[in-house]
Image (cartoon, helix red, strand yellow):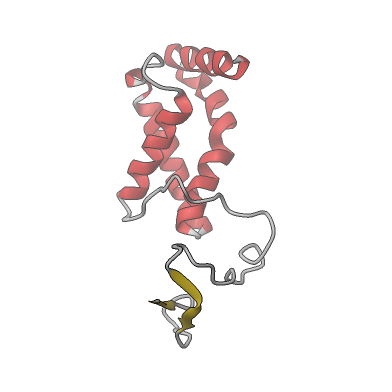
Length: 141
């Protein structure tokens, strides 16, 4: 509950004085960056989109209504819009980038079936391509 009160205080202060927006920026920068990086997987693009999200939030801060939603929810919507403009989506079921493991080491994670009707043994990796990471072609049962 204290987090919500602090958030509301930061928003009210930033609405009065835009220089105080830095408090909100400091609080949410890492979270927004991780959301964006999880979709772009490119550091430069993630930095650019994150900056765009915060500039948009600052520009439209007067429109934010704390009675309708939390600031973090509003910021997430701005993030979704910025990613959508680049043809990317922000799905709620996607996990944030791992701190360790296969992806952090630059290797693809093992194939895991997404649906119960898909057998992991029926997934066949296609030959590597210069255009991007390996593609897995999955066959149903």
